[in-house]
Length: 372
Image (tube, rainbow, N blue to C red; front, side):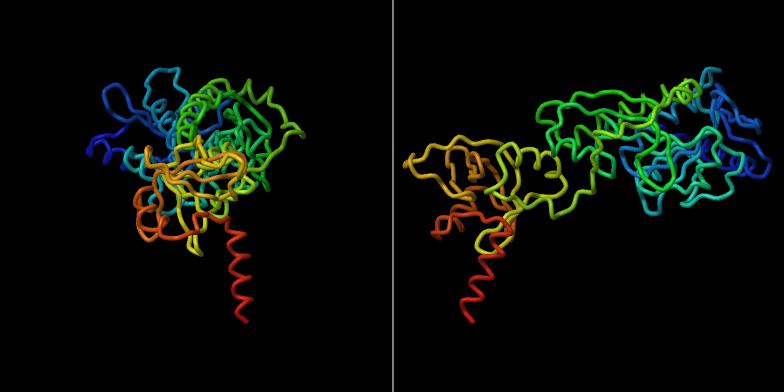
């Protein structure tokens, strides 16, 4: 973590005030720990660059850390001359990092940018940038996007990479274009193999690091890369919408073991998977993957959603389209182990069946209509 002393932070805040009043373009910390003003006013054709960073979440922090590290470098080969940050309201991770490292902060939307920056950098920001803002940067605005564009345009590319079982993904550095997200020309791109059984959180961390390094590589040779940028292919476009709670409902009769495994690794750490049991919503936790169940009657095919308590492993095995998947814990009124759920609920009723939400709604309507 790049945390300066309180004295250094106070000094930099004073210098930033002078920066705005006197027309300096930024500050660099020297080997003696003192900050020196950089008085270049005209846009440069090469590094070091005057950068304005737009970001919000932990994925964006990784790129901001790397830029901050380069800004602190005192060698003439550094790529960052000045670094300021635009972030959203609230205590988002990028704002916290900028405050801890005394980086000048702008609220959204920023103003008074004319002639002050060479390049913009957008990482996981979530707001569409207007053409007027984009045009204030002589070398445009770069975006670090965690997919191989044009695959998985949109706000949740990492989740959809896992959800759809992709084995290869990557990071794309593209130029921002107005009016639409993720459609600009590709400036740099790098592949990344998706590890087997990887979660969205694990993949996000790996791509954040890869994206930060690719950003530095791009800024180092930006003029050359802009000269060879390429438009995105018209084929292979896919959209990655935001993850919502509607995606967490398991449809036992339609989803395979692999489908449920991908769904859990994509969203399970943020949104628990859900099913219905006796008209109640149950959240399924601590997924253990595919289960191998031996049935007493091999000729009888269990209905999708059938639940079997496995005492030896303390697991609830549930039948899906092509097999059985297991969960160690459920959340009903409170958090229950598989044994707790079996002893307290499951063995007391003949209804050992988890029902998909759609089927549960239909069954409820049939019961209600029969009482009319």
